[in-house]
Image (cartoon, rainbow, N blue to C red; front, side, top):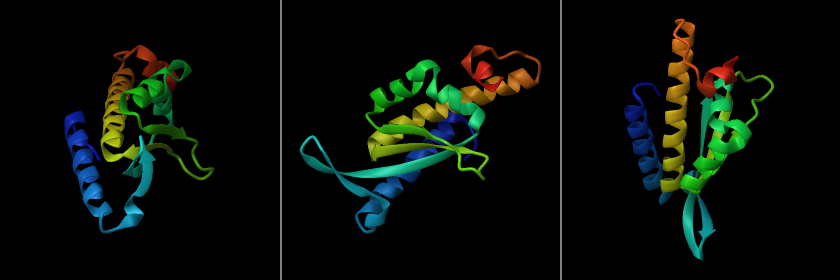
Length: 135
């Protein structure tokens, strides 16, 4: 997906809404999970990202990813790239609402990282943790 942060966030929301609808008729799309004594449908979404951006998603000492987990209550992991792959995946698991919250945070982080890298490449600096992660 490409576009503004808001447009990508809206597109992800629409995709998740369609997945949620499909869950009732296609159980391979979601998994039943017990949460606080009730059964909810859990979704797994993998977003493939440039390995250089992973430091921005994880944050120093894991603080950024911990904040995403805390805010969304989703399971969020940055996975290692397969030996023959050039990208790494960000895996988000949980009920659709929680997955959406986590993905919106990841999308915003990626947008900031991309902007900083473009500024740095153009000679504008960019600063911040994202620039240090790419060095």
